[in-house]
Image (cartoon, rainbow, N blue to C red; front, side, top):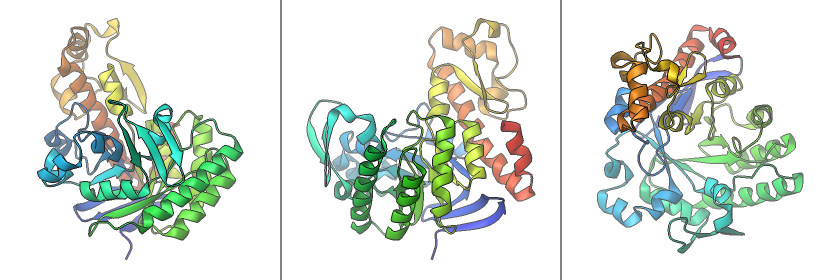
Length: 362
């Protein structure tokens, strides 16, 4: 039985429900990133207030710190971080890309030198699945190689073939009852490789399918080409997840192409650097002098905690004197913006007004 239901459509865009053992997730959905077991600057109670439905953790980072022994003793990742909603764990495949100077790829996985202390360890599909089973996350990602950009056709093909091998191995590993397993499409900017990868992983068979290897330096046009090349070959009855994306406009455009799930560090990262999302995806820097006497909220009409209680002038003051509260308020606002955008998309799909919403972001 499929874990995913499509409730309604607008062209290729879908309004759906993803069923997990810790609750249903209404899609399209944005997933806040909690790499090390915490969404930066935000508590689980605040995530509930923001109506976050699911967050992310990272296999590589949680394996290194605090380590599986401590998380197991705590009763699993959910109990350790005091979060009772679904958690998706990345497999560590992105670190194969981001920590290229600290690793060596072998046919069965990757030899890493820890970015923390240089200690050596091995992470492959067998190890990644075991770690994610121990973490007891609700959605488990297959182990892959996130293809770097730029890459020649030959490099992208070799990377794709490695990913296909690792995903077959990932599929063979045991998981806990109720854990869902997603495969990942690679292929860089080459449409024929994206098609080939999508067909390969659907042939293996997963609960859901992700499009990886995007938002790694390519242009937005190349990103959308990768999405366009993969989506037609992914099952209509399964959720589709675009990894590491993106800006509000990119999310809206990807929904229009049939994507259901998104994650990105942009809202929390921008908040820590003094920025806020407003309007149709525009950003403003609250550090700017012009906001020193601006006693309006970050965005008029926004219902987030920051906008209901504080002004641009006050938040600018907090940022300029180094008070952590300034970064927290902007992070809360930005996460609200993204989660509210997902809710607006769902409503527009239900009402048949998605194309009007899409036009606003163009």
